[in-house]
Image (cartoon, rainbow, N blue to C red; front, side, top):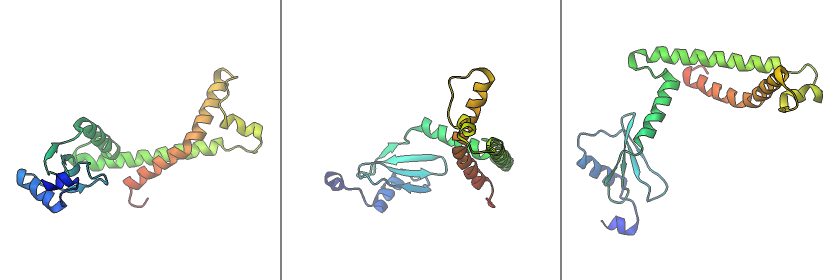
Length: 170
């Protein structure tokens, strides 16, 4: 087609009409367009499947990286519903929500316990910097505090986003 020679995409309605004519039994639920005119158009089929389409010709290129998609879909289902299927999804969602609340309590209590009574460098240093000059339980305590201190902001963000997904009140 002349659109391919110009390096321009087919108009979206024409592209969708051609793909629908070639796949009459397929019902598309979404379209993903990239800013790069040579990138394939992604047509979503339901919640899990997709079809890649050549933007200039409307030719179906395939389904993309199916194993990668399956991996991310499984992880999404695991984090939202414990990978449970439809009749048990509400139970899985409640379990992940309660786990988020418990994890939040754990992180906040760790910050509370860590909080130094006096803010002198000597007191704070052992919770901010890994010390390699100590051994045994003192080293374990130091590493636990340092890792906990530096990861707590990231953990709080992850937990709070999980709470938002689990509970409308959050």
